[in-house]
Structures are given as structure tokens and as C-alpha cells.
View 1: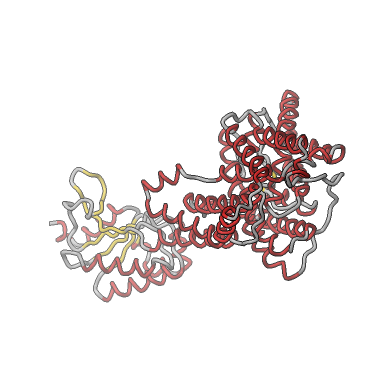
View 2 (view 1 turned 90 degrees about the horizontal axis):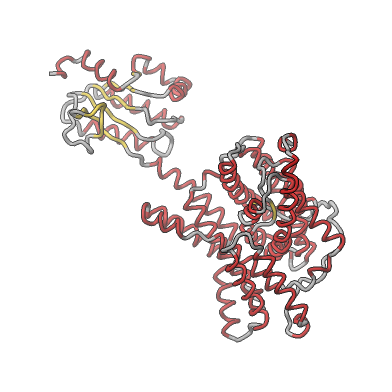
Length: 555
């Protein structure tokens, strides 16, 4: 709505042209990703039309393109395939309800201003998950590319099944020739982004199949005529025993789709120098998914392949998406038979090409060089998705992200500080062995928040610092500037530490503690327990107060 109020008439021609150009990509991609998700191809067009219109109304990004996405195909297929039992209408209902669940989760999270949650997945974990998803998607499409069927489930069994069919010579050579040439053409034409590589490949394959009647002569599977007309609103109804997997799948879709959308949105916002609101982005994505679910669609996300096409074609606003949606609607109303000879092997080539685009290698090499353990974390996540599948894989990714976060804070760095000649301030004595210590005073710095996972470790490290002091300790000052938070467990640990130190004749003080952390200590009763005189603004002030109380230490 904000864009509509500021719309300039000079943008109109660019938006219309970009919308028509983008349509040439939206149609084959929508059908291909629907088939890859275990849902009829026509529903891929429904899941393209409705979300584009919904996002144009509620989405904050000026040129973002939404629709079916290869990154979600494996997650959707993992839910739809076992529950649909091969029935297309049941598959549509399952996909529609997944979209609604995903949408409601996104809208609720956006209204609760939880747009930051996708930042909890580190880059190596995201790479591992997406590489695993890419492998899963590719393996699911190779049988279509070869013209064979493989009933095995799971990436490892699928690989074995494909190898077995190849070894037995069951490949349809004609199907492989069409699909392989389509895949090669798409990958080659990616070098020239302005060329509609997918359209050229699909149009060429469709022409060859129709011209030589390969569907009848060589057994090439084709899309067939599409139903005429637009999708009617429909409530997706499924058996009650399907709700658990649908809910789990919807949550996984919400996390993956918003992670992709937020990254893409931020990158284009930076390029176009426009602000981005991650919470409104989540709401816009959620409403687009809800709309897709009620109009016979399935979960959708932003597209890192179609958005650049829209930008390269000159898109200025979301009117580009509206034009694309209307063009697809006109196709379904007036020319649904236009795509009936489109070979499924060419659709598989589209999905495989898109999945290859998901694979990240170069940045993983960089991570391997600079942080080896994070590289292996990514590989573990990749192996989890490859072995257990898409939905267990996202659960594994989340668990690993939580473990990674806790690990960094569980055993953080700490240091005893001393004075260094010609260097301002107080510094880690392990880095500066010649640093001077004040007799009877231990300056202890803790480089992390204090919370339940490291509270005991904090307690032990402080006592170790006291035990290693070359002189009997009178004061221990915690340099608390790096401490950004304290929870109840840590507060109790501080109280116990004070009792331990007090029994040994040592007084506990704090320096440079942030006001929000002090506020928490006040709520816990610790600030009153220690008294205002136990908190110093700087380490230097604490040292001066100690020397004033113990003049002999200055000699």
C-alpha cells in the first residue's frame, strides 16, 4: 500500500514488461516444483498466482518474487508422499494445509516481532542443511530424468535404487536424451542471465516431443492438458492422524522459507537502498502462504532465481508480480492445452538445475580454512539431512544451532588482569607475562553472559584465580563489562561464591557492570546484598579504592 501511494507513472511500462518476461519462467518452474513436491503440476500455477497477489498487498519488499521453491520441495514431499497414498486430491489437501500451518506460524511470529529467529541458524548450519536438501531434491528427480521409477524412500535407498535400475539397463534413452539436453541447456544459458534459459529448454523439449509424437512412440511421459479455469477457494480437509506430520512439516517450512526470504529481502533492500522490516516480511510471507493454502496451492517462499529475473527485466514494484499472476491466469482460462506436450523429464531438469544452484561449496572452503570445527558442523548437518531426510534434518539443524550457541557460552574465555608498562588499561596476564599484579588484589574478567550453562564454571574459575594468586588475596574484583546478562541460576552461583570468598576473608566486588545487568541483580536481591559500594564504574576506580583501603599493597 505504501508503494501504491508513491507509485510513479514512469514505472508502469517497466513493471508490465518485467511481469510478462517473468511469466515465461514462472509457468514451467511452478509446474516443476509442484511435481517435485508430490503435488499435481496445475497446483504449482495456483501456488504462483495467489501468493503473488497476496504478497503485493502485504509484503514490504518492492520487487521480491514469491512462489513454489526448490528448497521446500523435499520438505513438502516428505510429508505429502507417505500420507497421500498416490491420490492427487489428497496430496493437494495435505500441501494446502501445510501452507496454512506455515502461514499462520509466520504471521504469528511476525506480529510477535520474532523476525530475528532465523538468525539463530548460523551460516555453516544453513549451508549444511541446504546442501542436504539439494542432494535430496536431485535424487528425487533423477528417476524422472532417466525415465524410470524408484519406490525406495530416503536418500541412501534412493541412490541404491537408481544405481540398480541403471545397472539393469532400465533407462529410457529417449527420455534421458530430452531431459539431459534440457538440463545442459539450462546450465549453459545461466551464463547469460538475460536469456530465459528455462523457457528455451522447456519450449525446445515440448516442440521435439510434439513434433515426433514421442509420448506415443517412445513412452515419454508428458504433462497432459491442464484443467481450464482459475482455482476456487477450498478448505483443505485431511484425516486427523495426518495433523501431526503436517504441523511438523509446516513449522519446518516456515523456518526455511523465512530464512531464505529474510536473507534475500535484506540483500535487495541494501542494493535498492530501501529499509526492510523483517517482522512485516514474515507477515507478508505468512499471508501469502495462507492464501495459497485456501486456493489449492502449497507452501511457497521467496525465489532467489526468479527475483533476479524480475530485477534484470526492469521491475520497479510488486506490480510486476501482479502482471505475472494475471498472465498465468489468462493462460489457464484461454489456453490450458498449450503445455500438454511438456515432457516431465524437462520439468525434472528444471528442478535439478535449481537444486544445483542451492549447493554451496566456495564459502565452505573458506570456512574450512578459517574455522575447521564449524566446517565439520556443516558437514554433520548435511549428513543428517542426507541420511534421515528433510524434516528430521531441519530438527537436527535447530538442535545443532542451540548446541553451538550454548557451547560458545558454556566454557567462555576468562582472564586475570594486570598492568602493562606503556599500555593503557588492564590486560590478560597470559597474553602479557610481564604484567604487574597488585598484591592481595585479583582482577578477574569474564567474557560472556552469566547463565545456567556456565554458572558453575564461573564459580570454579574465580576460585582457581584466587588459588593461583602469588600473594594472599584480600579483594576479588570481577571485571563485568563483557557480561550482558545474568539469570537466576547464575545469580545463585554468585551468592554462593560470595559466601565461599567471605569465609576465606576475601571481599567480592564488581567493576564496569552494565546498568541492565545491575537491574537484574536488583530484582534478584543481590544488589542490595552487596551494597552500592561494591560496584565500581571502572577497573581503575576499583584499584584506587583497594589501594586506599590497603596502602601497604602500593609499596
